[in-house]
Image (cartoon, rainbow, N blue to C red; front, top):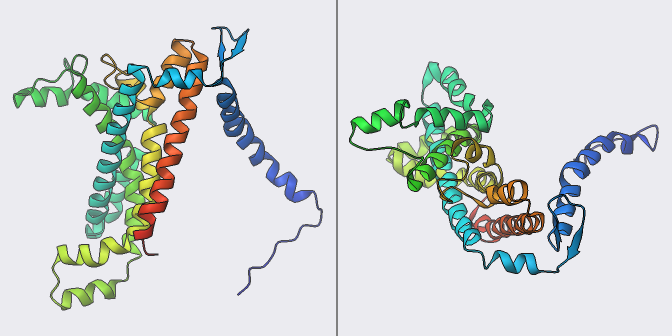
Length: 294
C-alpha cells in the first residue's frame, strides 16, 4: 500500500513549518561544530581578541600530552562500565517488571522516576549518600569494614561517577527493554516451555535473540550517553578529581576551554572526541548490526 502524499495549498508553507527546527539545529548543533572545527587550527588569546593559524599543531600537542592520554583511558573505562552496567541492569529490571503481576504498574512507575531527574541532581544525591562524613552509603560500607573516601581515593571516585551515571540511564534502558519484551509473541515462549526448555534456555534461545534490535539500538545510545552526556554527573560529584582520576574527554574539553582558557586545544579535543564517537558508532553498525536479525 502506497503512503498518501501530503499536499499544501501554499508552496512556502512546508518550508515555514520546517524553519524553526532547522534554525534550532543550525544554532545549537551545526554552528558550534563549525566553530570547534575552525578553532582547532588556531591559537587564540584568553579573551578571543586575536588568533593565529597553526594548522594541526593543536592536534599534535594533544597526543604528546600525558594528561590527555590519561583522560582517553579514563573515558573508555568509564564509558564501558556505564554502558555495560546500565544495559545489564535495565534488562534485569525489565524482566522483573514483566513478572510483577498486579503491582506491575506501580513497579514500572517507581523505576522510571530516575529518568526524570536531572543529571546534576542525581549526582548530588550520590554525593550526599557517599559523603565520607555523613553519607548513609559511606557509613554502611564503614560498618562492613570498607573505608570510603572518594575525595582522596581516585578509584572510589571513578566508581562513584560510574554508579551515578548508570543509575541515571537505567530507567531509559528499562523502558525500551520492557517494550521489547511485551512485543515477543507469547506462543513462542509457551511452545518452548511445553518442549521442556527451562527459563534460562528460553531466555537465551528465544527472548534475547528477539531483543537484539532493541539491544543494538540501546548500545549505540548508551555509548553516546557515556561519552557526551555525563558531564553534569562528573562536574557535580568529583569535578574531575581527585587529581585526574575522573577527568573524561568531555570534562577535559570544559576544563581546558573554560578554566584554562586554551580555546585552540579545547576545540581540537572536541573534534577528536566527535571523531572517536563517530568511529565507534560506525564500528558498531558494521560489525555488531550484522548479528542482529530484525
